[in-house]
Image 1 (cartoon, rainbow, N blue to C red):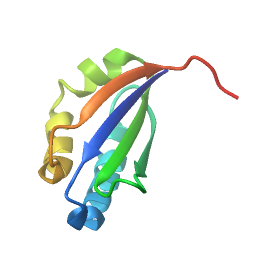
Image 2 (image 1 turned 30 degrees about the vertical axis):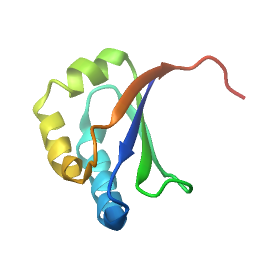
Image 3 (image 1 turned 90 degrees about the horizontal axis):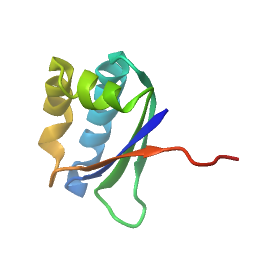
Image 4 (image 1 turned 180 degrees about the horizontal axis):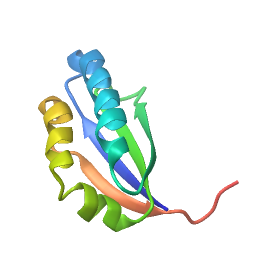
Length: 99
């Protein structure tokens, strides 16, 4: 399983709108993608306007090819992209250990 980690920055004044949009986009668009396993969205306490989106995928290619090269990616970006203060920083991680 692969974890996509996206560090997202928005205008804190639009937090309520953004939170509604990201939850709607994740549950209606991303959740339909092949290899999608689940997601979490966290809001920073210390840094207003900072969010971490974590999406679990079966494989790296399910995200980088299957989703990002599909029309669904454009739909997703149309929902959340208008809120971005800067491009999100996205990384992919593999699990090393767990309790």
